[in-house]
Length: 144
Image 1 (spheres, rainbow, N blue to C red):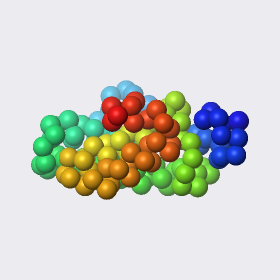
Image 2: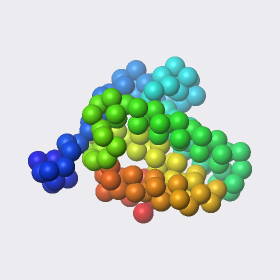
Image 3: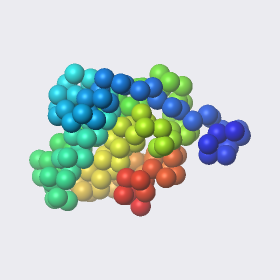
């Protein structure tokens, strides 16, 4: 039985730890350095996107566009890792598993940036993806 209670659905994907990147982020290393050294680590891209969104303050400006690009990079790097770990494009990616959070945070930041620039279809796709991955993810990210 999956953690989401669907006996016929796919098993939850639990991404492997990217220990060096996660340790660097946890120790306060600049996420720019972490993204440059470990470009496959969605957590660094998510942090860059979230910081740019915070600087943008809900306005459409360079920081908003940078946040969109950072988030899209984290999203795509996360998709690559998910697929290498058995994800078929749908199914559970639990928020509770910390290594999954970089990908989910990237999707959340992409949703926020898309909403800010008026890309409503992308915003809706991101919310749908978060719902499919883990119904709690959007609220964990303050998107509900």
